Image 1 (cartoon, rainbow, N blue to C red):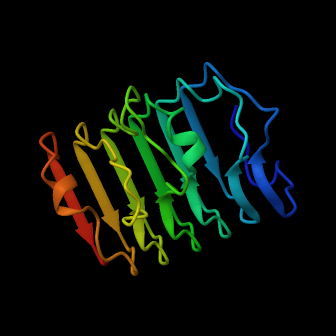
Image 2: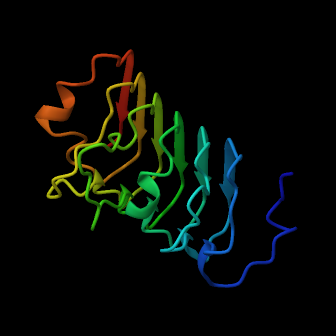
Length: 174
């Protein structure tokens, strides 16, 4: 079910999904026009929650600083499509702070094929480049970035060298 902005009367909310919300079979999630929401996910997410998520679309969040926090990165191993548009405060897409990828763990986002970022005026980086987390973008085929005024670096040279599946790269007005 989809809701229009008029159907949802949300006041200032710290996060959209708290620790009691679990969607273990959810494959597609479309979120939009929640201008006062500061975080989408709680710090404590149930074990199987969002574990089958294939597509995530986030549109028009004015106070959101990051879309995918470190505690969610391991849970969304099947994520193939990520679209983020018109989030005026967004500074990074993936918050890797505190994330420890040890041996035996799949690299985060190893199945991500399609990444689209549009009209994110404060976006500085996809993730904290200072962290030692290796993001697995080896399946990335389509990367589209428009109107991200503060974005200076997309990938480190090492990550760029692993983008063997990249078919289309579009960058405009950044």
